[in-house]
Image 1: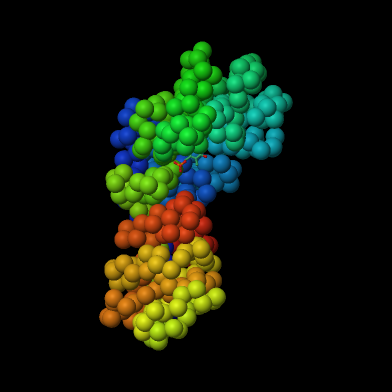
Image 2: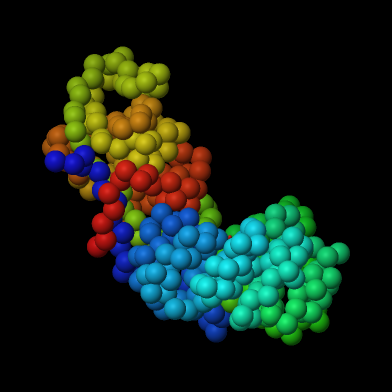
Amino acid sequence: MPRPILATIDLAAMRHNLAQARARAGRRRVWAIVKANAYGHGIERAVRAFADADGLGLLDLAEAQRARDAGWRKPILLLEGIFEPADLALVDALRLTAVVHGFEQIEMLERHRPAQPIDVYLKLNTGMNRLGFGAADTPRALARLEALPHVRVVSLMTHFANAERDDARFGRAAPAEQLRAFEALAESWRGERCLANSAALFLQPSIGGDAVRPGIALYGATPDATVSAASLGLRAAMTLRSRLIGVQQLQAGDAVGYGSHFVAPRPMRIGVVACGYADGYPRHAPNGTPVAVDGVRVGTVGRVSMDMLCVDLTDLPAARVGSEVELWGSRVPVDEVASAAGTVGYQLLCALAQRVPVVEV
Ligand SMILES: *Cc1c(COP(=O)(O)O)cnc(C)c1O
């Protein structure tokens, strides 16, 4: 009998979330972002669930290959572009659209003469200060690319540092300021614009453009901890379940787990769940992090260990070894677990461990 932990991926929820994104996108094209193994959900599943998207966005050539092998025929956007000249052969072979964010990539394109033209998205740095050309370099970058007969610059793009909220305290990285910087750089540009991630798409309707790039929302988690995924019309795609494998009766003053981070204030029953940080559950989850046992929400007690964590069964006298536990999913939003542990749903979904078996529903 295998260890009783299992992640289920709900393809219908992924389709539903894509439809929600599309409704918000209006006439804009939708790139479904599937980097990091589709945020832990599996590239091949994403290929099926997001069949209605206009394209897939990712950044790993091996994942692009997997998407093509799984039958994806529509465009694939390579979000960080190429890393070395040898990558251009795969961009050709897999017919990828490549982001260009730096002069090193332009040099590689200048030296390469592929059989077919390569479609390029030029990435502008409008205030996030991660990747992209700034005000001083954009005209030169665009001119050099447009001089290449084998390169077609089809879109300008940028990425928002704070798309969830337009707040002046973000200074030049406030969405309105980034948008202003983008429009200044794109003033004479007649092609497309690609702007919105999930937060911009769901929370900043004034951020327009011709194409959007939602990621996290497609998996049913929130792009902003102050807004629940459910209130955005999203459904959890991944549910992580396990079972109780032990029950302990504690006396007042008894401690639980490594470091004795929880001390029972009174006699209580606790359950031991077959899920730990080696499964991707956050070790920093504090006492009281929500968990559902037999469908009822209770809280964790004690430090999460590699293979186990403990939960308070005081309100669940019927719970016993074998009782079902939902760590996150439709009853316990991954965003609540993440928030308790000081992180974001993105990280928990992406970090689902290899050792956890995954099935589709
Ligand atoms: C990851 C990523 C996205 C998607 O972001 P979400 O917050 O998951 O919607 C969009 N654009 C770029 C460039 C990205 O790297």
